[in-house]
Length: 159
Image 1 (cartoon, rainbow, N blue to C red):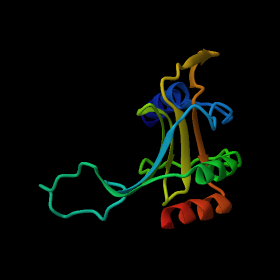
Image 2: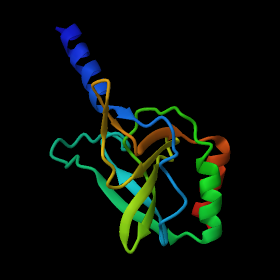
Image 3: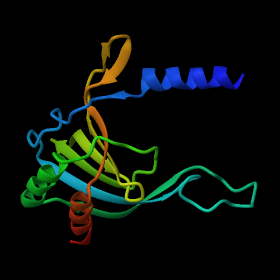
Image 4: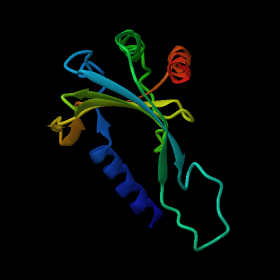
């Protein structure tokens, strides 16, 4: 029985877990506003367990800080983004978001986990494609930050 569950899990991961292997879709153009937001997250995975069975265990995400990025900061951000590593650990608690807007409409964004150092690049309104029977999102990249990128993000958060 465990084998059947494993096969189902494996197939669902293959079918629904496909992503782009490069970040060429993520461009430094066509946006007029970039906003960095830092969240405080309380979820099942990021909080200590509660012994109160009646306590609500839903995720709570509160804004800790918001900041509009300057052109200089945006240019430096894109230089660092091009060097993101193509590895990713399981983590769903992204506590830093950098959103790119054009005419107040979200066009692309970066999600970062300060805990696992995961980084997710995604472009809005992008159609998924089929390749060899697998659904691939050409506008989603899951990776990991390097130590230089971590330092840069920390510097952005301090200013």
